Image (tube, helix red, strand yellow):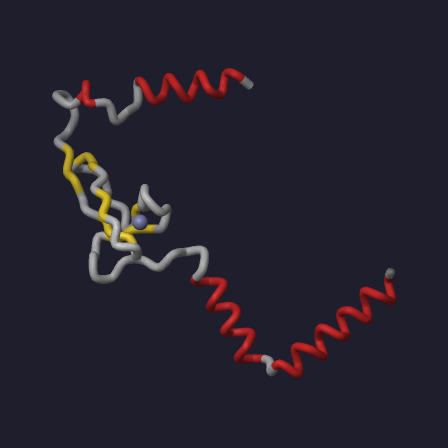
Length: 111
Ligand SMILES: [Zn+2]
């Protein structure tokens, strides 16, 4: 249990991003990413590395993209909204109530 912290600590101290190796490794480039909250983050990459399409914003945790005018949407709310809209399109409120009543009746029957 205590070993978890020890491993973490040693990784931070001797991380692969350490500046000490700078002279031997490929030059680094900095890419700006923008999240939908207007935060800018500039992680560095080895110039040979593949640049990811999105980067997690360190300030709000939302995905950030290289296009400032068109940042990626937050991943957690979009599918939920889309699904809800889809359900609403498919079923009227009346249908929803009937289905709910049926489900409740089944639950009561089993209990
Ligand atoms: Zn952000």
